[in-house]
Image (cartoon, rainbow, N blue to C red; front, side):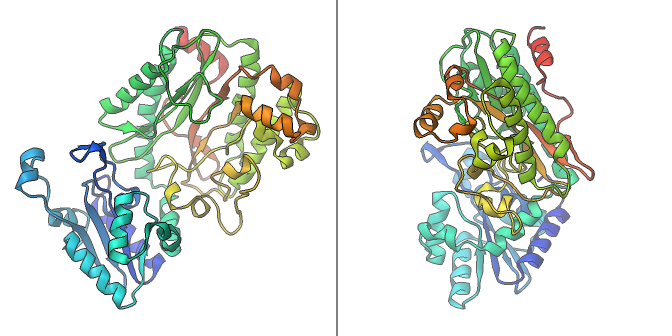
Length: 465
């Protein structure tokens, strides 16, 4: 458990106050088999269950009966057969005491408890499930088909969880800093390994091993690719080629499941070409510009579009874009080069709480998502920033051949794009620079004690030492 017992008690107390009435059901995760039941993927606890109960064991759940001011940790004690293979573990009662919970139930008792509550017409609040075994469990207990569970999940509970988890405490920030320290080692290792002949998979395997060597795991499947224009370019066996760029987007997740997420783009030959420098310097300027804008009370929507305007101005200087900057950005022409949002919230999930619904996490009554415009529909956050938010700052410029062909054929945003010049960039790839930032009382700051090199001269000097 990351926090002391009283922290989890306080988390649940605030949750009860915000939800107000009814029963809150928070399901933990079960083991997930890789290819047969006893060969499971590494266990990963549900983040919201962990936030309110702090226990990492599989096969648990939590019930908060607000109306009767009663809490339960739910789970079955392991039997002698499991002890033989896995050793003794704390009893459910012991874990409940560690979490400040007075009562326990078995899984069968929980099913009876919830079925009785439902028959009495009581409100049962649950979060949208994302694992199919838990969807089946909810269907058995509450009679809600999996296809209807997201729609019937409690918006009141979702909003209460989001309100608590978005603002990070000093203890949480310290844990994220630990993840950033591991991420620093992962990325600097990848940069040092980046040379012709080595494979993408070898680099990805090495950096995953660094996370594992700390008893941790990667916070998402590492993106390691010469095809940086592919948003999720997972590593292949292909050897790195001289003259190209390697994009590495990777992060670490600590034992308490707090994450880091960084991206660096490295010249495989050790030096950027002039054309690569021109594009890289724009991304670099956009990355640094975001740091001057992000502060409490500022809408992330405005930070994103501020960066998009700067990017458009700079691409106009290279001749890749043209026309009025405001009109171009309003039309979404910049999304030819950056089809994603500037960044996302981060914490216990690398895309923090994304499973609860991005509309609830990244937006609010004041700022609503634009789901119609290409590029803007991928903006994961637009709401006003608050002190204690953790965000990623990750501008990028990508040359996606299929997108160039598609927009050229349809004439989309033709008044703002130089398609003839774009044709000459189809073999370029993509560049992204990403860091994790904490919103402070008067602005923002980097997370992580050491900075992964990203300025052009620093990158070249570092990889050629």
